[in-house]
Image (cartoon, rainbow, N blue to C red; front, side, top):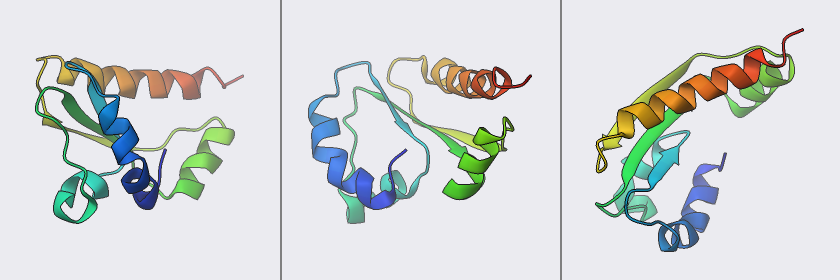
Length: 104
């Protein structure tokens, strides 16, 4: 996960590596919501999805290390491929499986 400042700094590299049909995934929405301020404007030919943990970075990390999950929200901003919903639910499922695989 990148911080808001990290997203802004990395955006030129990320944008130059996006291909038609790719999914652009965010774990928090500041960069995409405040596009006029951040300059993060995705091309129209990619899916734009979000899976956001409902906690601070420290809380998310502490829960992960303890083998516990945390609530999350999801959103689909752009569904170019028609598969954005499937992609966002796969991220949610795989995140949950990663947590459960750490359980004894």
